[in-house]
Image (cartoon, rainbow, N blue to C red; front, side):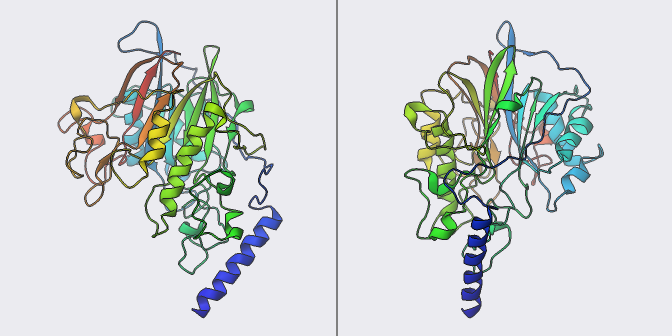
Length: 418
């Protein structure tokens, strides 16, 4: 008990010192310079639009994929991707090539400040044929820091010890683990990117922040995004489409206070509020100190592994339901062909309609719909799907086995008329 009290006191002192030093924002509206990488052109020229499946004229294929390209040590992913020989990365790249999205968000992709991992995957895997598929070239990419692995200086998980992945601002063994990368065949307007990595959870009105678990000092440094939240404008044929990219924390791996469940709910709510209906997002501030939500009338698409299924699993269904029912967007209900992702290991009857996007394996919730592509109502939808071939179908080896050769998530895509 004495040891725990000493560490608790030390944690409080550390948090206070961080707040005073500005290492973690202590103000309601911090002005913080985001360490964004610049857009880095590929040597290959941009490819033309993919053609819509059931339509005439150009289509824009937008996809999200939790690729599980994370490693236990900082820098290891960049090292693995510096050569074209990593088996998992080759499987992930082949899945991307088989679906050929024009804009692609990858979740669980370790961040490094130089963007070496993102460049390595683009140049050594996506731009090279995998399994006989045509390469895909992305002249533009965007990477930015993540809250994962950044020490909070506090005992966030309440185990009496300060330090470790569960005490970081977002769960992670090192800064940037489980990050994100956005690839695009179309120019990214970097001057107008907004990121919300430093938004404090306490600054969301009527949040579910468990105040009985986090004392006032901790609440002054605890950020809401477990990774980050991005608004990345992409220019498509003279039109701007805002890519709203996120990866909320899983709603599990916590205690009776349900801090992760509450955080997942509020991260999804923040996305919904940012879309700007009825001034709901007026409280939001970005990492440059600019306040307010996405301006009304903008085209957008929400992308990411949101770690929430309204019909199953451990999350609170209210936030994801509210997002899907936001009148400013549409849910195309992407599905696997032939109902491939039936509930092999999960709860009977869940997602046997092919809408599931992840299979978490034996002894878990099984097949859930947690990955989303949700475009604004201003962007007509032409087609949508989940890449999940059945056993015996071409490509099934890319998603089979446990653990799978690629990821426990599946690529989700939507074809839009830009």
